[in-house]
Image 1 (cartoon, rainbow, N blue to C red):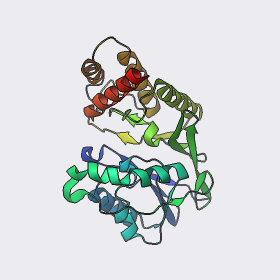
Image 2: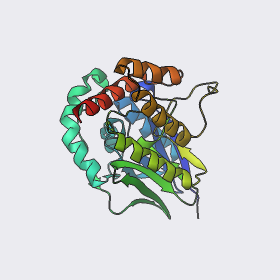
Image 3: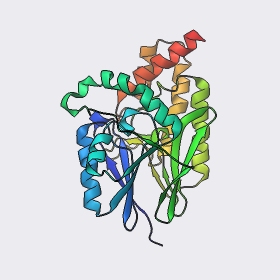
Amino acid sequence: MHPLEFRVVDLPESSLHKCAVLVLGQHRAALIGTGLRLSDGRRLVREVERSGRRLGTVLVAHHAPDCWLAAEVLRDAFPEARFLAPDPVRARIEHDYPAVRAARTDLGDELPSRLVALEPLEGDAVELEDHRLELRGASLGLPDHHYLWEHRSRTLLGGPLLWLNAHPWLADTPWTAQREAWIDLLDEMAALEPLRTVPGHRHLTTPVPADVPADPIAWTGEYLRAFATELGKPVGPEAVALALQHRYPSAALPAHATASVLAAREQRAAA
Protein backbone atom coordinates (compact mmCIF):
# COMPACT_ATOMS: atom_id res chain seq x y z
CA MET A 1 0.00 0.00 0.00
CA HIS A 2 1.38 3.38 -1.02
CA PRO A 3 1.75 5.68 2.02
CA LEU A 4 0.20 9.10 2.05
CA GLU A 5 2.27 12.25 1.88
CA PHE A 6 1.11 15.39 3.66
CA ARG A 7 2.30 18.72 2.26
CA VAL A 8 1.51 21.73 4.43
CA VAL A 9 1.10 25.04 2.61
CA ASP A 10 1.61 27.95 5.00
CA LEU A 11 -0.39 30.94 3.81
CA PRO A 12 0.66 34.48 4.78
CA GLU A 13 -0.45 36.75 7.60
CA SER A 14 -2.95 38.43 5.28
CA SER A 15 -4.62 35.01 5.09
CA LEU A 16 -4.44 34.56 8.88
CA HIS A 17 -1.45 32.19 8.74
CA LYS A 18 -3.79 29.47 7.52
CA CYS A 19 -2.35 26.01 6.89
CA ALA A 20 -3.85 24.30 3.87
CA VAL A 21 -2.88 20.64 3.55
CA LEU A 22 -2.38 18.74 0.29
CA VAL A 23 -2.70 15.01 0.92
CA LEU A 24 -1.04 12.93 -1.77
CA GLY A 25 -1.65 9.32 -2.66
CA GLN A 26 0.12 7.47 -5.44
CA HIS A 27 -2.08 8.91 -8.18
CA ARG A 28 -4.68 11.15 -6.57
CA ALA A 29 -4.77 14.03 -4.11
CA ALA A 30 -7.12 15.66 -1.63
CA LEU A 31 -6.89 19.26 -0.49
CA ILE A 32 -7.97 20.42 2.94
CA GLY A 33 -8.93 24.10 2.81
CA THR A 34 -8.83 26.65 -0.01
CA GLY A 35 -7.39 29.79 1.56
CA LEU A 36 -8.94 33.21 1.80
CA ARG A 37 -7.63 35.28 -1.11
CA LEU A 38 -7.47 34.68 -4.85
CA SER A 39 -3.68 34.46 -4.61
CA ASP A 40 -4.07 31.70 -2.00
CA GLY A 41 -6.15 29.71 -4.44
CA ARG A 42 -3.62 30.25 -7.24
CA ARG A 43 -0.80 29.10 -4.97
CA LEU A 44 -2.70 25.94 -4.10
CA VAL A 45 -3.38 25.28 -7.79
CA ARG A 46 0.38 25.43 -8.40
CA GLU A 47 1.03 23.05 -5.51
CA VAL A 48 -1.44 20.52 -6.92
CA GLU A 49 0.02 20.80 -10.41
CA ARG A 50 3.55 20.43 -9.05
CA SER A 51 2.56 17.23 -7.24
CA GLY A 52 1.67 15.45 -10.48
CA ARG A 53 -1.47 13.94 -8.91
CA ARG A 54 -5.08 14.35 -9.95
CA LEU A 55 -7.07 16.41 -7.48
CA GLY A 56 -10.16 14.41 -6.62
CA THR A 57 -11.46 16.12 -3.47
CA VAL A 58 -11.41 19.51 -1.81
CA LEU A 59 -12.67 19.26 1.76
CA VAL A 60 -14.08 22.28 3.58
CA ALA A 61 -14.28 21.10 7.18
CA HIS A 62 -15.10 24.42 8.87
CA HIS A 63 -17.14 27.54 8.18
CA ALA A 64 -14.32 30.06 8.68
CA PRO A 65 -13.80 32.00 5.41
CA ASP A 66 -10.12 31.05 5.18
CA CYS A 67 -11.31 27.45 4.68
CA TRP A 68 -13.50 28.12 1.62
CA LEU A 69 -13.54 31.66 0.24
CA ALA A 70 -10.92 31.06 -2.52
CA ALA A 71 -12.59 27.86 -3.73
CA GLU A 72 -13.52 29.42 -7.07
CA VAL A 73 -9.89 29.40 -8.23
CA LEU A 74 -9.59 25.68 -7.54
CA ARG A 75 -12.99 24.94 -9.07
CA ASP A 76 -11.95 26.69 -12.30
CA ALA A 77 -8.59 24.88 -12.39
CA PHE A 78 -9.92 21.43 -11.46
CA PRO A 79 -13.52 21.16 -12.73
CA GLU A 80 -13.68 17.40 -12.07
CA ALA A 81 -12.80 17.70 -8.37
CA ARG A 82 -15.53 17.27 -5.77
CA PHE A 83 -15.93 20.05 -3.20
CA LEU A 84 -17.24 18.47 0.01
CA ALA A 85 -18.34 19.71 3.43
CA PRO A 86 -20.30 18.32 6.38
CA ASP A 87 -23.94 19.43 6.24
CA PRO A 88 -23.74 21.88 9.19
CA VAL A 89 -20.70 23.53 7.60
CA ARG A 90 -22.45 23.82 4.23
CA ALA A 91 -25.48 25.44 5.84
CA ARG A 92 -23.39 27.91 7.82
CA ILE A 93 -21.35 28.94 4.77
CA GLU A 94 -24.44 29.47 2.63
CA HIS A 95 -25.98 31.58 5.40
CA ASP A 96 -22.82 33.60 6.06
CA TYR A 97 -21.70 34.21 2.49
CA PRO A 98 -23.41 37.60 1.90
CA ALA A 99 -22.09 38.94 5.21
CA VAL A 100 -18.60 37.60 4.53
CA ARG A 101 -18.54 39.27 1.10
CA ALA A 102 -19.63 42.56 2.65
CA ALA A 103 -17.14 42.32 5.51
CA ARG A 104 -14.11 41.43 3.39
CA THR A 105 -14.10 44.31 0.93
CA ASP A 106 -10.71 45.09 2.48
CA LEU A 107 -9.33 42.31 0.27
CA GLY A 108 -9.90 44.51 -2.78
CA ASP A 109 -8.83 42.72 -5.98
CA GLU A 110 -8.02 39.65 -3.88
CA LEU A 111 -11.69 39.11 -2.96
CA PRO A 112 -13.17 36.06 -4.72
CA SER A 113 -16.31 36.77 -6.71
CA ARG A 114 -18.61 33.79 -6.16
CA LEU A 115 -19.59 30.98 -3.82
CA VAL A 116 -18.71 27.50 -5.00
CA ALA A 117 -21.43 24.93 -4.36
CA LEU A 118 -20.40 22.30 -1.82
CA GLU A 119 -21.60 18.71 -1.90
CA PRO A 120 -22.50 16.98 1.36
CA LEU A 121 -19.78 14.81 2.80
CA GLU A 122 -21.23 11.31 2.94
CA GLY A 123 -20.23 9.40 6.04
CA ASP A 124 -17.46 10.41 8.39
CA ALA A 125 -14.36 10.24 6.19
CA VAL A 126 -12.72 11.31 2.95
CA GLU A 127 -11.48 8.28 1.00
CA LEU A 128 -8.14 8.64 -0.79
CA GLU A 129 -7.09 5.49 -2.61
CA ASP A 130 -6.89 2.87 0.19
CA HIS A 131 -6.75 5.42 3.01
CA ARG A 132 -9.36 7.18 5.12
CA LEU A 133 -9.14 10.70 6.46
CA GLU A 134 -11.58 10.43 9.35
CA LEU A 135 -13.60 13.48 10.33
CA ARG A 136 -13.62 13.64 14.13
CA GLY A 137 -14.45 16.13 16.86
CA ALA A 138 -17.78 17.95 16.59
CA SER A 139 -18.66 17.29 20.23
CA LEU A 140 -22.02 18.18 21.73
CA GLY A 141 -20.52 21.35 23.20
CA LEU A 142 -18.71 22.32 19.99
CA PRO A 143 -20.63 20.74 17.10
CA ASP A 144 -19.03 22.68 14.23
CA HIS A 145 -15.33 22.14 15.05
CA HIS A 146 -13.71 19.11 13.42
CA TYR A 147 -10.29 17.60 13.01
CA LEU A 148 -8.99 14.88 10.67
CA TRP A 149 -7.23 11.67 11.63
CA GLU A 150 -5.35 9.23 9.37
CA HIS A 151 -4.60 6.19 11.49
CA ARG A 152 -1.97 4.39 9.39
CA SER A 153 0.46 7.32 9.48
CA ARG A 154 -0.93 8.59 12.81
CA THR A 155 -1.38 12.03 11.27
CA LEU A 156 -3.72 14.57 12.84
CA LEU A 157 -4.90 17.69 11.00
CA GLY A 158 -6.26 20.02 13.65
CA GLY A 159 -8.17 22.54 11.55
CA PRO A 160 -9.85 25.27 13.64
CA LEU A 161 -9.06 23.45 16.88
CA LEU A 162 -5.27 23.78 16.70
CA TRP A 163 -3.17 26.95 16.57
CA LEU A 164 0.55 27.49 17.00
CA ASN A 165 2.17 30.83 17.82
CA ALA A 166 -0.90 32.76 16.62
CA HIS A 167 -3.70 34.07 18.79
CA PRO A 168 -6.70 31.79 18.20
CA TRP A 169 -9.99 33.20 16.97
CA LEU A 170 -12.24 32.67 20.01
CA ALA A 171 -14.95 35.17 19.13
CA ASP A 172 -17.02 32.28 17.72
CA THR A 173 -16.71 30.43 21.04
CA PRO A 174 -17.59 33.15 23.58
CA TRP A 175 -19.14 30.82 26.16
CA THR A 176 -17.02 29.17 28.85
CA ALA A 177 -18.67 25.82 28.13
CA GLN A 178 -17.59 26.01 24.49
CA ARG A 179 -13.96 26.57 25.41
CA GLU A 180 -14.12 23.76 27.97
CA ALA A 181 -15.48 21.47 25.24
CA TRP A 182 -12.55 22.61 23.09
CA ILE A 183 -10.09 21.54 25.80
CA ASP A 184 -11.87 18.18 26.00
CA LEU A 185 -11.28 17.72 22.28
CA LEU A 186 -7.61 18.57 22.74
CA ASP A 187 -7.40 15.81 25.35
CA GLU A 188 -9.06 13.46 22.87
CA MET A 189 -6.45 14.38 20.24
CA ALA A 190 -3.53 13.92 22.61
CA ALA A 191 -4.82 10.46 23.57
CA LEU A 192 -4.42 9.38 19.93
CA GLU A 193 -0.64 9.90 20.31
CA PRO A 194 -0.19 11.33 16.80
CA LEU A 195 3.21 11.15 15.14
CA ARG A 196 2.48 14.20 12.98
CA THR A 197 0.23 17.07 14.07
CA VAL A 198 -0.63 19.97 11.78
CA PRO A 199 -2.44 23.03 13.19
CA GLY A 200 -5.03 24.93 11.24
CA HIS A 201 -3.02 28.13 11.73
CA ARG A 202 0.62 28.64 12.61
CA HIS A 203 3.12 31.46 12.64
CA LEU A 204 6.53 30.16 11.66
CA THR A 205 9.57 32.14 12.74
CA THR A 206 13.32 31.57 12.59
CA PRO A 207 14.62 30.87 15.12
CA VAL A 208 11.64 29.34 16.90
CA PRO A 209 10.96 31.29 20.13
CA ALA A 210 12.00 29.38 23.24
CA ASP A 211 8.53 29.75 24.77
CA VAL A 212 6.72 28.11 21.81
CA PRO A 213 6.35 24.32 22.17
CA ALA A 214 6.56 22.19 19.04
CA ASP A 215 3.22 20.54 19.82
CA PRO A 216 0.17 22.53 18.63
CA ILE A 217 -2.09 20.54 20.97
CA ALA A 218 -0.08 21.66 24.00
CA TRP A 219 0.21 25.26 22.75
CA THR A 220 -3.52 25.60 22.10
CA GLY A 221 -4.46 24.07 25.43
CA GLU A 222 -2.11 26.38 27.29
CA TYR A 223 -3.57 29.38 25.46
CA LEU A 224 -7.17 28.43 26.26
CA ARG A 225 -6.32 28.06 29.95
CA ALA A 226 -4.46 31.38 29.94
CA PHE A 227 -7.47 33.00 28.26
CA ALA A 228 -9.73 31.71 31.05
CA THR A 229 -7.33 32.96 33.72
CA GLU A 230 -6.98 36.46 32.28
CA LEU A 231 -10.68 36.73 31.46
CA GLY A 232 -11.55 36.02 35.08
CA LYS A 233 -9.57 38.95 36.43
CA PRO A 234 -11.50 42.09 37.49
CA VAL A 235 -10.05 44.32 34.78
CA GLY A 236 -11.37 45.78 31.55
CA PRO A 237 -11.28 43.91 28.22
CA GLU A 238 -8.39 46.02 26.92
CA ALA A 239 -6.27 44.98 29.90
CA VAL A 240 -7.17 41.31 29.35
CA ALA A 241 -6.16 41.47 25.69
CA LEU A 242 -2.89 43.20 26.56
CA ALA A 243 -2.16 40.53 29.17
CA LEU A 244 -2.61 37.80 26.56
CA GLN A 245 -0.36 39.64 24.14
CA HIS A 246 2.22 39.96 26.90
CA ARG A 247 2.01 36.23 27.67
CA TYR A 248 2.53 35.42 23.99
CA PRO A 249 4.83 38.14 22.69
CA SER A 250 5.82 36.31 19.49
CA ALA A 251 2.28 35.22 18.58
CA ALA A 252 0.80 36.61 15.39
CA LEU A 253 -2.72 37.99 14.95
CA PRO A 254 -2.91 40.00 18.21
CA ALA A 255 -6.20 41.56 17.05
CA HIS A 256 -7.78 38.15 17.60
CA ALA A 257 -7.13 38.51 21.33
CA THR A 258 -9.03 41.79 21.45
CA ALA A 259 -12.02 40.49 19.47
CA SER A 260 -12.16 37.25 21.46
CA VAL A 261 -12.09 39.00 24.82
CA LEU A 262 -14.80 41.46 23.80
CA ALA A 263 -17.06 38.63 22.60
CA ALA A 264 -16.58 36.66 25.83
CA ARG A 265 -17.23 39.68 28.02
CA GLU A 266 -20.38 40.55 26.06
CA GLN A 267 -21.75 37.05 26.58
CA ARG A 268 -20.95 37.22 30.28
CA ALA A 269 -22.76 40.56 30.59
CA ALA A 270 -25.79 39.21 28.74
CA ALA A 271 -26.02 36.02 30.81
